[in-house]
Image: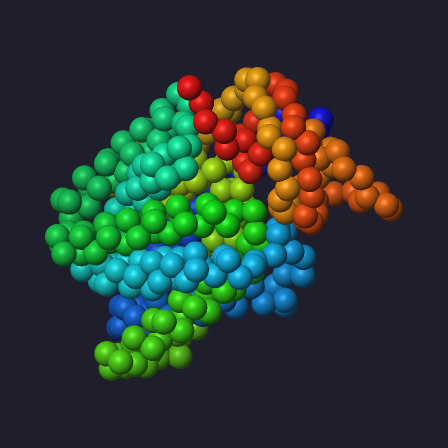
Length: 350
């Protein structure tokens, strides 16, 4: 078996990339969307996300193909995560400011972890729970800064908080598609979300944005909602929804830091306190260990896999090296090794 020495390491890295890509767009989103309607802004963001899935950006599928039975879930993800959530976020940023709005995004990690436990019964070890607690404390320190700022507005707070709840639900829904090709998911979700919000913007008579604002919002969507979602799905595939959501709490910190440096031109005391809390939380995730004896039932399914991971012993003629996806059968297997809550290790714990 040639699993990573730390099974959580690669998923943790993917989650961090997703968080940085998303968090870095918040101050630019606040600036570009200042004079643009929230529905129009959401539409341009997910147009950018859809563009990130074009063949010009990627050539290789990294998961099983989408099937007809997946489109109900995709429709729900598009409505909640690509229409409701960004619209609430954009409206909230206009009433709280970039820094304060960034801070509130920490709530997404909490909602995602709770929903993952309720829906998928994902178990969090002591290190993961401690990491989530530290990240929440870091978010509290940042939020306290925001509450003392002149831009703090309760309606804006409610809107951004609603966006985090919507994305928490979206993350829970996307967990069921973690083994499908993330590029296809981003493309379909982007097109559906952009179409829904563009239609709503026309119905409500929102005015067209300037060319500069439109281009900046599309670029924000390309990186912060397209590539970010792609890496988020890859992280969910390896470490589950709860841990990915917890690590995604780095995103608000990134957004708050950039807003403080480029908008507020200063780093507040709460931000300095939050930095080590987030760093320690990230280190706890990265070094998490989990192993015990467990059994894999016999099953047939289709997902990305390698033949040197200790779980896929079927043969190809000619032999295939590297990760690939196709329908395959597993015989029942019992063994003991380090593992993360991926598609083969979503078993319950006493």
